[in-house]
Amino acid sequence: MSRSILFILGPNLNMVGQREKNIYGAETAETINEDVRRWAEELGFEIEIFQSNGEGEIISKIHSALGTKDGIIINAGAYTHYSYAIRDAIACVPNIPTIEVHMSNVHARDEFRHKTVIGAVCRGQISGFGKFSYKLALQALSNIFESEAAENE
Ligand code: DQA
Image (cartoon, rainbow, N blue to C red; front, side, top):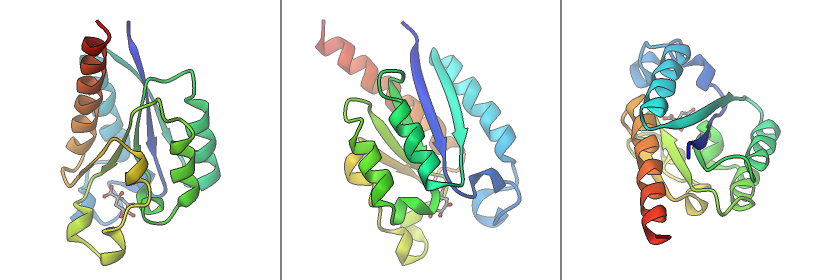
């Protein structure tokens, strides 16, 4: 059975490759997404990649995962640090394992980035490995699915 993953990219992440290259690198969002698609395929996942700069759109997308997706990977960008509405949306889909991801090491940056309001409703957080943070998140979901399947045997 192929697992279906929703990969959500929040505000300003469409600008990766142009924005703050010293932090996020020079590789464009498009080519990073190509890597993500390949990594997902290697793990046998179907993946939908969704980018939005709007909080409401991200919330509706999370709701739409109910009954249609097996896992969520979310880089909520700056919303990570203050969007209680996105946190509540993740809490609406408790049976879908959700991984919080950041390209940069948020703990080594501005103090406001040290706080995550979505972390408590996610399975875990991956931060600081550039585009490979996304690969690690896919691997984390793969491990979760394997251990759930073993428990149900
Ligand atoms: C980010 C870190 C956030 O603090 C920032 O607002 C972003 C990107 C990251 O991937 O490192 O937009 O989520």
